[in-house]
Image 1 (cartoon, rainbow over the protein chains, first blue to last red):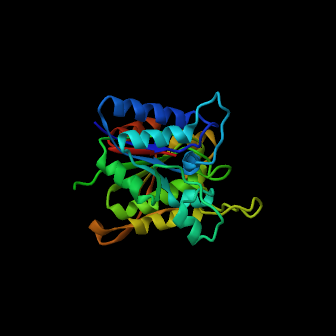
Image 2 (tube, rainbow over the protein chains, first blue to last red):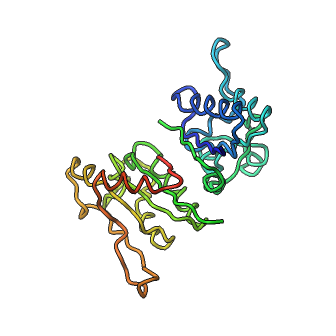
Image 3 (spheres, rainbow over the protein chains, first blue to last red):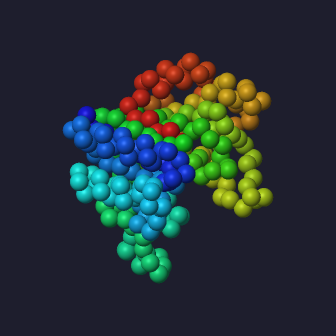
Length: 130
Length: 134
């Protein structure tokens, strides 16, 4: 089965991001393909490398980064949603004249077309939201 | 590649959170992909189509006029759940009139909005390939 994943909520406030992670990890471990994980709305906040959760808690963005590295899965942040919320990679920060960037490893910024394309390519698009 | 049937389900009020506005952004971008697109409005989502919205008091963007552009993007299948309207004391007359020009009928202007029961909506959902919930 080819899955596409849409994550509509940020880390820690809602369970949606955790559920999306567990689903994606389980699907990959079971040998399914995940064509793309697309982060939208506050979901883009999963892509910051600057979050510092307490040591006895999970680190949500590091967990996504590790998954991307292990399975070579695409993690895409919507550019418009990311810019609104201050999620910037090096290029975007430079373009917008900002003094820093905060993108975690394995995440990339791209357009909403990647979400539609994921829906077209996948057998199932699974939406994780509130 | 054969086109797929995309359904966008809008469940939330237009203001108070950004879901409605960002959902509309996906619909407009997605329209360029030449897929079969349907929109559904249920629960507080029906408020998104209310006429005469005015956000000046809360200082947020009033994106409701953008719905009028949907016809130009070939998005002409818009379903509003009757039960959600009735529970909120609304009827189709309270909604922004959305139309499209039917190319198969000499470009006649037609209504895009259809008020349907939750059972009819269930059938519509059943027919889709890709469902995005906002």
